[in-house]
Length: 504
Image (cartoon, rainbow, N blue to C red):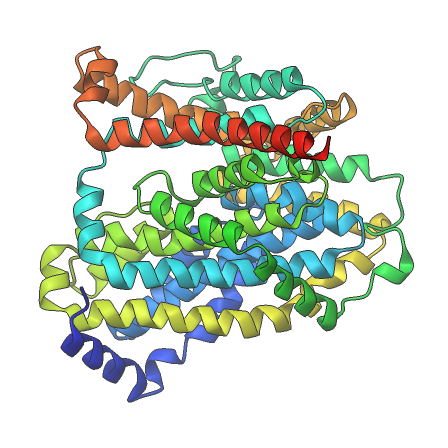
């Protein structure tokens, strides 16, 4: 599966000179910073620094841009853990258990868990890409809207598990998010309600809404407290405890490997990517856990599942770009622009004729992952200091940053207004014990599901069930999803009954 000659040539391209690596560390730092600031997307950082690559050779440009990609994937998880602010939609599930751990004074351990899971997840994703790039390219070509419907549906099933106290409240919150996703023009060009606001023609901007409902609403709820971590003795940033948290990751090998594999596979599907991958991984970790009641309250498995899938999806998203010349999302679209600047077209001919360059990019990304472990650990000392800032200063400054991030994404006043409206909505939901995450999942995945359903109906001439039977991959995914959703809880119940019988 690996061309040994091309692999040795790739090592030569990477390690005969230091030039390919000169911009890797700056790229990782840029990604960490952009990823940890609410509203600043990784694709935005890559686009801003794209002109810098004009004077570089192709390999150096790719390593620089992918370093931003790699650093940003972890940077978004840092703020999700420390402040309940997912740096991007791909870090939503990281906040579910990372933030409760931080509030309990376990922020060091949570940061260590997130860093180790990110590094291992990304490493697994790129190893799989290196070994399987040709078979994966064939697989990606067979993925159509029906397969994507099944994957997105799998992500939506997480809604039902997000509120342990009341299933009905979780479902209501998720259904409300799905309703909100239908505001604006439909994917078929039909105008729906805009509540009289022309800024909503394209629907509710998801990232400003996510910033408002997660971050701003939590800050409003904390306004009576003095610090994020109340116990003064727990506010220190300890390398020892961070490393202990990183080591604890290996106590959950099943969660780690499953999350990495889920991220790599789902990340390879164009248009789905890490936003769905980390939700599916989190949901599977909770469903298969022996202690699902601890999820949402600071379960280490939740952080590991989310961060491993989030990071391994990077390798998956590179599959379509390298093998087919198709960007799987906004970040890989920027990478595609870098391809065109250097007169290179991704696809089968690129893999066949420049295999050494393809291997160089993948091996370079594996090297970035190792550097992320070192640089991420060093940066945590700085980023983790947020727990020592009094909330009297932190709340207004972060709220201002949230509003600025909302404006930066939309370019209009609609961004800050969306942040404010969803902050109020999130505050009301939290006060009445409705899971805000369920609403965000509904909003995030609802429009994606609608688009894929419309395309499926068009292709199947209005007979989606018959079409499903004609698509072996979609049918296999659907059957597997049903087995996981129904079979795992059933096996767990039978196991518990058996244990009770033995005990009696």
